[in-house]
Image 1: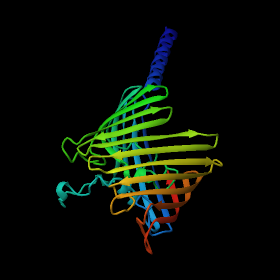
Image 2 (image 1 turned 180 degrees about the horizontal axis):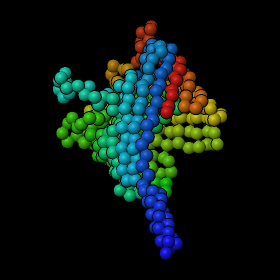
Image 3 (image 1 turned 60 degrees about the vertical axis):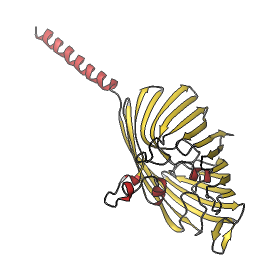
Image 4 (image 1 turned 180 degrees about the vertical axis):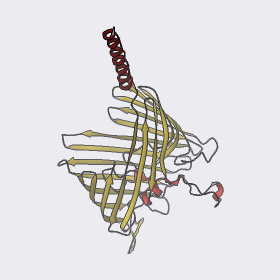
Length: 344
């Protein structure tokens, strides 16, 4: 009898243990992650083109970037915070003071680069709501994800971020579709103008993306192509082209090529060739807001673990004397930049 009793108890214990292990193995995996970066740099020239970031003279600070994310079985969130000059420039659409400039209502959201939640409706359909970086363009805000440290005109005057809701749809093995309803561009905290909502569309095919941003009371229409091709085991060519117009007769367009060659696991060399034209924008520096610019940037990238060292030479040439240097008006600027980046 004791033998039977012990056998039954052993069997029940084994079944309970197996059930617990099975439940543990079948339980959905959840992940909390903390990542980010810091960057700092030296710029040889006091005078810089009108593009974003890396514009301060001498030894200067970029930003500290802290990204908290949680990924569940069906849903998750991202909270991306930025501190420092580069971060402040990136979130310029988040005012530090309250509505109407009331000094008694200071806002903390001027450190929020991204803040969104998402829900996976299915394996091929995800809904995202909140504030997220733009889907247009080749370059991004984080210096870790860009090959060149300084940024292009197209990136600087295209949108940085959007607040709204978007749907990402996997339409096939190599095809994706994104549809979005968005606030006014770079209005990251709230919608400042009634019924000024915009819409965005992205079509991705084999790693090449056609993007469109339009609508709003300003009548914005921007079409953008972002892509690239591997031309060998070590050679990659990135491509970006954009064209913008609105009802206030502001127009700009540009094209850039990003050749990059990897010499080893630790060193790569890349360049950016950009041609940019504007009408009514004033990006290059012309009083009339009209002008053309070409820029050439060559960047080395040395990586050791999480540390990235980037020496860079940038030369900008305008169609007229739209820039300013120590001698006054000029049609050209040049600078040597050395950046130190650490990611975690």
